[in-house]
Amino acid sequence: MRNNKLRTFVFFFLVSSLLWIASQLTKNYYYTFKLPIVYQHLPDAYYKGFLPNDTLLVTIKTSGYQIIKNKISKPELKIDVQKHHLLKSHQWQPVNFKNKIQNLLGNNSQIINLNPKKIPFKIHHVSKKHVPVYPDINLNFKPGFKNTKPAEISPDSIWIYGNKNIIDTIKQLKTRHYDIKNLDRDLDMTLELIKIDGSKYNTDKINYHIPVSEIIEGETEVKLKVKGAPEHFTILLFPEKIKLKYKYFKDHSSVIEPRTFTAIVQYQPKQKYWQPIITTKPDKVFDLHILPNKINYLIKQ
Image (cartoon, rainbow, N blue to C red; front, side, top):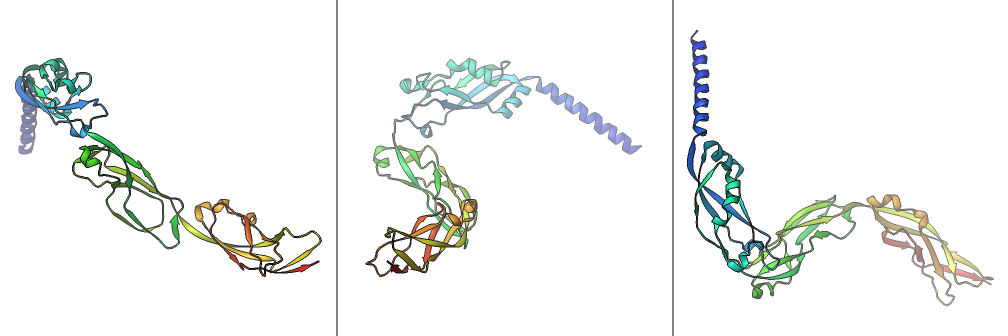
């Protein structure tokens, strides 16, 4: 019986509390919002990083519901710099944007006061320069692995802004130093650029990509052909086949065909030895070694 009475009391207490809160939220209150200003469409000759961080204090009379809604939505007043000629006037009056502010804070809200009455717009024309980016990254590959192509960075150059005397001294931008150990797969990273005092960048990060694969060792034998010998001569080579040792990446296994290797020796009767020349080989092969690299011969006329 006592538990039932307690539950009933709590239930009606909560309901009455919610009804009281709801009735209070329907009432109008005076409240002052801090409305952030966002400047848009700045010409290329200026850098948005130097824009002022202005805030407008807006006192309104509105319902409790609208106050809560504005606190959750966090509206911003966006102003087109070029459309409103702020670079020429160097100031603007919030009262000229009263209707826009009204829409942001709720049509049922009544604007009581805007503060300040005038807001200065001060931004300096700055010099800009396009400079290359250098990734300061040390790669340590796991044994048997290597990059299949040079690293790619994006962007490979960026715009910097600032005083001309400062940016004229900047020839390139470096990233923070990174050490990567036991690398055995493709690497994709975001690298952070080092800041230089007195300058701003259009981005403070770059993307770094390097493809990595396992190194495979291959071996094959190729029969030598003699090039340039007279037709009536018989040439005996010792040996008549050479052994080729080479490397390729596992990712390229499907395009490595040992039969595509061909080799010759050039007919040079005055030379003591002839050296094998590889005439064709798969494009993806590297570190190619020829054994032996000197060929004895016998000429029969």
